[in-house]
Image (cartoon, rainbow, N blue to C red):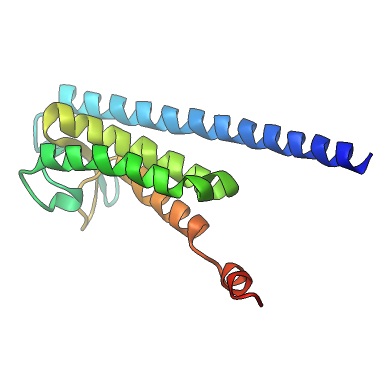
Amino acid sequence: MAEAVTEASLRRRRARARSRLVGVLIAGSALAIADQMARWAVRSAMPAGDRHAIAPGLSITSATNDGAALGLLSGSGRIVGVAGAVILPALALLAWRRITARPAAAYGAIMLAAGALGNVSERLVRSSVTDYLDPLRWPPFNVADMLVIAGGALLLSAVAPSETDARASEGG
């Protein structure tokens, strides 16, 4: 009897986890699509370098980045795109066990993947990325960049060994 109850509760937990994961996949996809639409709108409606203030300290700017994050490695857009296309799946494979064991890691991985996919796909097609959010005293960026940073931080915090993990592996 206890075995049936345990199996039933395990099935319910898995169903809830799948439901949450589907929700996060939908949200990540919606953010990635919104980001691509914003990039298209900026490229279509604004000449390069054009800037429109939308709030104190924040502008919408038509900027392209043909390097890595924050303008590093300028002129290497396709190389950065290919590197991202190779590194992203490799990281996902390495982190798979932790991702499946910890929901926060799964959410972080999905956010990271959605952002990276947006940037990598544009780099491979255009050799550069369209950045449009331009805060005061910071290089322009896009929603995909925010997803990469937030998702990466969430993923790292979820898979980093905790003190409890360290004590358990030491046998204490």
